[in-house]
Image (cartoon, rainbow, N blue to C red; front, side):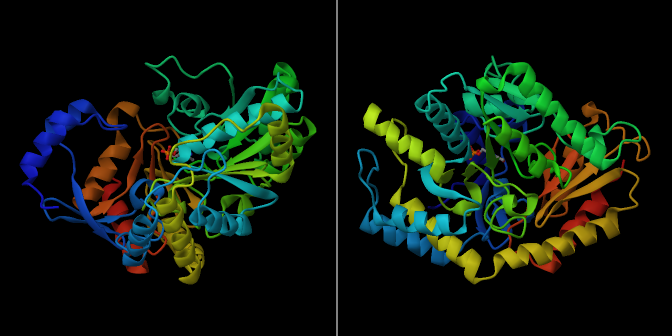
Length: 453
Ligand SMILES: Cc1ncc(COP(=O)(O)O)c(C=O)c1O
């Protein structure tokens, strides 16, 4: 594609596109940042400016940009079978091969996979499966879901309802009333004065128990949780949180759904976050790193116990009536399988663990004494830098001053892209798993130069 000049592109962008999660006014005033090529961890804009992408797009380009082997696999699959649907018992060799690989790496007892297009539809699919499963089991009243404050599970009508960030609700009639909200288990921000981390964890679990008691376990189908919150501020719960939560949910016949859309496929230094956080999911959503963003594809997983109920159900209903035109897309499945192979064969999971440890160590060394940095958190190549107006009181910066945006704009000026998370006043990093130590050093140094008020 021959590109028109940048000014014309920007004007056409203003004229024709409604962009996701963007300020229309800012787009009209300043125009978009148009990225037109990328390689490794670096993206290039239409002015020829190179930027180190320390967020891997939207937390997704795990294997890095511009891989010809992945492009070749997509070309080959497109030529062989550009598309065929998977409704009405149709299948293709690519979804079969990918499913076999996914089940071999999936945590716990997950044993069947459903393919979709993105993280939102994976979570939406799992909500519907939870409904269907309970209906078939003769428990049709179990229709509600528990989700946490500051969670992010997507922006469709159902998943925006699970999402616990106010900007995705206000000005829409959301959240829908089948979502019950519980606390964000963030010790640094939500602990009571003098409360130990163990006592805090127990209080979080007791609050869930109370919610279940109050609302009735017979009305609740599932609990949705990211192993580590991503968009809500890179928040990791106390160590005992998930094992205790899981035991409580089991007692009440409530499914635990791990939303691994960000944590999955190597980001934390293991295939899935569940392995590190002590989760044995009943269901699991994944997308993003599944194809490293080379193709829109999601994989939603269930256990054999759930599958057996659905299987017996189709004897009564005639079918599992859910799916998308592009479920099991041959090109997407081909590139996902190749992507998982390169992640495995090139040792990217170990890289995420080792270089992740290096990143966290560097962040602590360089930013630990910065007066505007309250907490540095995360694991592997997922990191959050908490901005505070007062380190001792942990007071957040005034929202109106938009500190996270100021910091990331300055970093961009220094050639590094980081992600501002406005609500939790946090800067997020989630670079490609192939980021080098020199690139980590550049990222940390740009952060250090930019966090000043
Ligand atoms: C944890 C989590 N779940 C779900 C989603 C939604 O994915 P998508 O934007 O592909 O619908 C996201 C997106 O960032 C996410 O971070």
